[in-house]
Length: 144
Image (tube, rainbow, N blue to C red; front, side, top):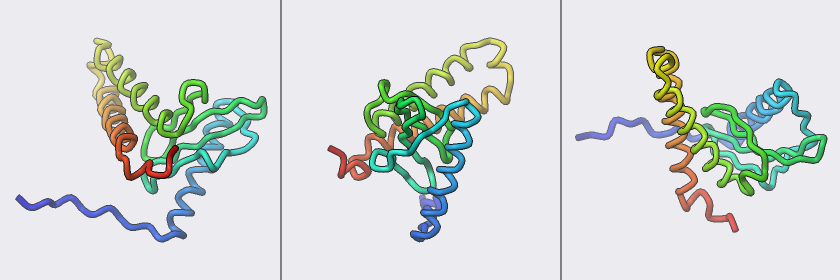
């Protein structure tokens, strides 16, 4: 049987930079919508897997650090205490999304709603994808 999965698009450095910039803007917008004021992004701790996801480490105005994930995944945040590294943050998000999906599927009313079930499947797919990325040793070669 022939593999018909298309090869992922190769991004030029300029395209990748533009993608990262747009995700950074979206991350800042999300934080503002949540009432969180970022002071700065800690780029040395942040990670990008263009064009799939970005994991940002922000320091807030009140000197707290948090992780934000966005891209082709649900935008979500977690405090640094729950996840000391980008890889740990990704594992945390994967688990949280699996739990959210399970709660939707177990809720009798939500389980009857096709939109909620689509959302649950979306959460599961993204959770499995980012968890798989945390296990890909090639992606984390330069981690301590």
